[in-house]
Amino acid sequence: MDAKIVALAGGSGFIGRAIARRLLAGGGITVRVLTRNPEKARAHLDLPGVEFVSADIAQPASFKDALAGVSTIVDAIQFDGYPLENPGRGLTFERIDYGGALALIDAAKQAGVAQFIYISGAAADEHSAHPAFRAKGRAERAIRESGLTYTIFRPSLVYGPEDKVVNGLARALRYAPVFGVPGTGRQKVQPVLVDDLAACVILAVSGRGRNGTYDIGGPDLMTFDEMMRIIMDASGHRRPLFHIPETIMRTVGGLLEKLPKPMLSRDAVTFVTADNACDIKPLVDEFGINLTPARVGMAYLAKK
Image 1 (cartoon, one colour):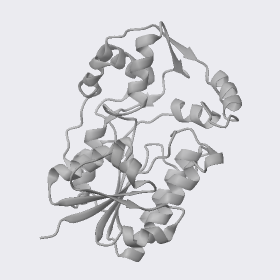
Image 2 (image 1 turned 135 degrees about the vertical axis):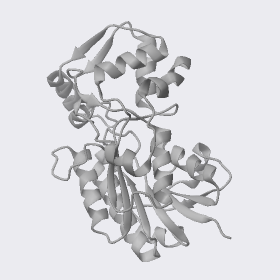
Image 3 (image 1 turned 90 degrees about the horizontal axis):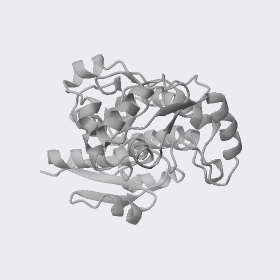
Image 4 (image 1 turned 180 degrees about the vertical axis):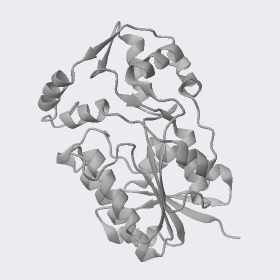
């Protein structure tokens, strides 16, 4: 019997790699990574059972052969430098998140792909003033109205041994005598282990959560300050925290976003100071998963 083929857009990224490993671990599935640069992607995810196919959201015709025989598309696309947009390079939420979803939906219909799984975000809202939340909200609507069988996951902050955010915070704590928290530190987060998100995606591939939208976060809702203390406990690097007012961050972001390679932007400030709380009950009821507490999931930080 031929293996089921799952096409994975964004397969070489942090979340995509975790999903690919889970899909392969279950057996009976071939993972086809859709990427503009197959050789570069292979360097990040060189595993038996993974195919790398050239496909570009800016070139819809490239999807025709890429989706041949595919039963499910998983859209886990994130652009380089996320969440800092770089319009000069075309790296914007509108083009990549929303435009990418539209291109994949159209390609899926033409290729006869039956199922679409989308990695959105906890704050997705098509009416939001923030480009990331708005683009993901618009993508969600397009998916729901596509006629395809779909499952949408809305993760809070996703972390794991290969992530950039939590690992970056741990490294900063190691070398800094004090640590500056963005905003008040009271913004709500619900960190979710990437393996938990990947496990839910695999269940969705097998039929769970059809035509549903599910928040996914860890079992513990906390403030950003509380998350920082967990990171400090896990890494063994305890530092005094101070808070950088959002107004100051926006002023700095307004200057830095004008650089060819922005280090910060006003929209990025909104992104890190926004609440990312989740209602996980529908997810737990449907998928039956035991979500990993942050203190358990972040134990790997002891090596940082």
